[in-house]
Structures are given as structure tokens and as C-alpha cells.
Image (cartoon, rainbow, N blue to C red; front, side, top):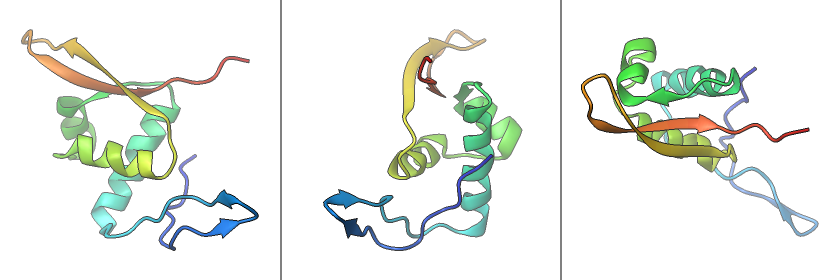
Length: 97
């Protein structure tokens, strides 16, 4: 289900831009990005603690930024976790229809 990472620069074709350029991704980060994207595409949300437990990802906000650069509409809401801390929860809203 995951999208391949685009490592080429942005190209303008007939007035429209292709996928944004994507650079500086190691194999581990690329694997985390694929896993996290699959998680979102399954309709699930993700917090930093969950990302660490499920995917060994210590920098979820950075991986979300990477996915946004690839054009994925990832949104954020602030929620309370089990310890009543306010944390960011990321998700993709699927269009209706």
C-alpha cells in the first residue's frame, strides 16, 4: 500500500508540479516512513509513544513532515494520553464519497 519515495528533484510539466523533491532519507527512515504511511492508510491514528512502540520511531513529527512533503494530507490534533499528558495525534482523513 505504501508509495515509493521520490528521490528526484521536482519537475514542472505543463504548468503542474510533480511530487516534491525528497532527499536525505536513510534506509531506516524510509522503512519507518513506509510503515507509518501504511498505518495511516489503514485508518489508524498515531502518537509519538505509539510510533516508538510499533515502529521504533523516535521522531514521529519528522516522519510526518517527510510524508507531507510527499503530498500526503496528514492532520494533527492534540489529545490526552494515558498519563493525562497533552500529546499530538496524527492521522489522515479520507475524503468522503
